[in-house]
Image (cartoon, rainbow, N blue to C red; front, side, top):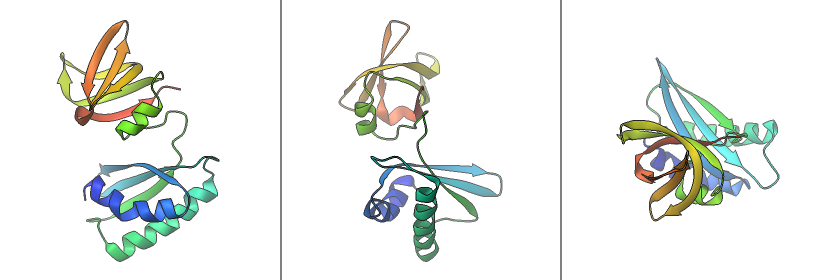
Length: 147
């Protein structure tokens, strides 16, 4: 299942519980997959929060059955090396250092690490060692803050 459809399915429940749904990672690992849901709130996220959200999401996934095959559900806080999933999240962390991987190489590279200086349209502007890169958001495979 695509993460956009999965996000639409579970976001109302997560938001209704008072949390922000930061993003979803879906990682195939052999015979089963790991479905990792990242949540946040203004007051932070505890293990109890993750457990409550996990129970709610499990019920939704059991009823709607959007997953094909066995999977492990993990609900997590973003942590210090917070993953970034949306343009809005990149905007929120302008000025911070990120590490990211592109889906397709740019200038022969897929991995970048530098300071986000701005979000220009659908591009992330990143400065790495005094060189500015304009990286299309749609080409970003994964990105995390550097603590």
